[in-house]
Image (cartoon, rainbow, N blue to C red; front, side):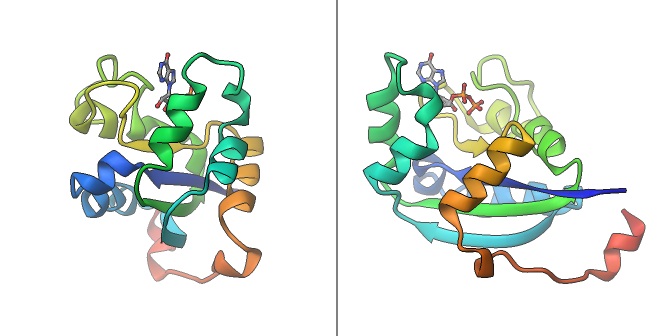
Length: 149
Ligand code: IDP
């Protein structure tokens, strides 16, 4: 059984709406382990790097403007299939298509403000964790509950 790490981030709308605790709680309740967390403002440079795959899209400038518009809560989660599981909990990009019970389905309204980001592959998880966290900020520790998950 191999554990993997993923990167999730409560976006500025989620922070402004007071959803940080409830969102992080969903991942904890699912059994994923918090390996790092940081409350921060994203610089335009970091935003452009984070969303570089979308730089040719018509919504790119708005996306960068939005993600830098207020603080975000960035988190590294760890666990078996952490990337797939966290994407399931997050739900589809467009909250109108995300089922109730998912974070975007429960809290989101439009895809421009869909509350949360989550890495979609091992490659993007590694890249995004490296963009947002120094290696020493990602903690390794044991939890006794891991034997039951
Ligand atoms: P994801 O966040 O579900 O992985 P991506 O396709 O990687 O979705 O898009 C990154 C973010 O860009 C989305 O979370 C959403 O906020 C925004 N976005 C995606 N598609 C559109 C669009 O067509 N119009 C406006 N914003 C979009």
